[in-house]
Image 1 (spheres, rainbow, N blue to C red):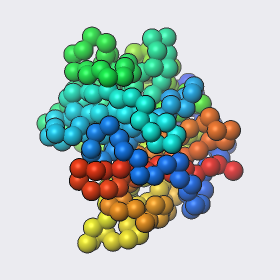
Image 2 (image 1 turned 135 degrees about the vertical axis):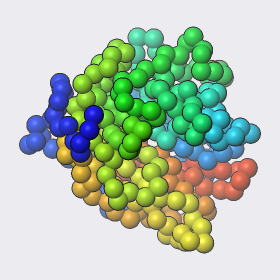
Image 3 (image 1 turned 90 degrees about the horizontal axis):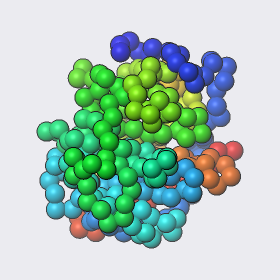
Image 4 (image 1 turned 180 degrees about the horizontal axis):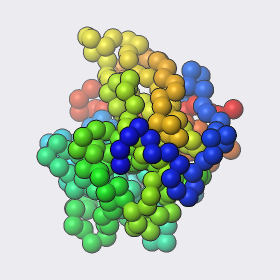
Amino acid sequence: MSGLATGLLGAGAWPASAASPSFDLGAEAVPLFTGASLSSETIQQSFAFEPDHGRLFVAQLLAGSAGKAGDLRITEMDRRGRIRGWMTLLGYGHAVSFGVHRGRRGLDLWIEGRVNDNGYGTVLKQVPWQHGATMEQDDPRTIDHQPVPDAQEYTCAIDHRAGRMAICYWSGVDKRVAILPLREVLRGRVPDPVADFARPEGLGTFQGYALDGDSMYTIDGNSYSDTNPVPGNTHLGRIDWRTGELVERLHNVTGADLDFREPEGLAIDYRQGRPRLYLGFASGVVGDRRSNIYYLERC
């Protein structure tokens, strides 16, 4: 897989005239909840919504484990920021982004697994959600997938409405994005990509992404510091995956009054009548990190 974009290669590709409406990245975001405690004490890394009932899952590195060990804690939250359950995944990765899907065997997390020496997952893992469970790499309840043969590191995001999965991956040469037919990935196949392109230049510290129609939204930036004072360097971006171009990138000041304020995670949910683009931020101090999630509604 090479070049900027391989273009419209497979079933489910969008014709050039079929652009989907985009979110106004400059609009004021509304808080879903702020200052919520998670089931571990660390910074949230990403979050995802289950498509049928809108259940919310938040991923973080497990407190007490070395970051490169890839030990994760997944917390289920309600929409008021209260904990509903959790599970632990040992040796999985960094959880920059993941997906949730409900299939024949129940509710599955689609998340990176088999951590490498850099702390990132080398396969895409299908993991059944089980409150209170601890699952290691070779747990027989999990399934390894490698839907992008060139990928050495995996993360994913799912567009349930359009039936596609975005995979951000490291090829060994560059950072790339593949857009795949979701149905084929769920069947354990290695499908022809709908598109495959180099991740555009011009993004800061990459903190998450979400797939919606012909757009892939990104969030980048860092926590507050002496060199990154209020209102910070968080940006929201939009990539047109049909061309691989970063067509929009705007400075974002959502939650500017949070302490620490590190952008962490991006996700789409369709169950509120209109699609919402959710933005995540970590706040708080070491030993008492908090989750903060806001949203933009599409007009």
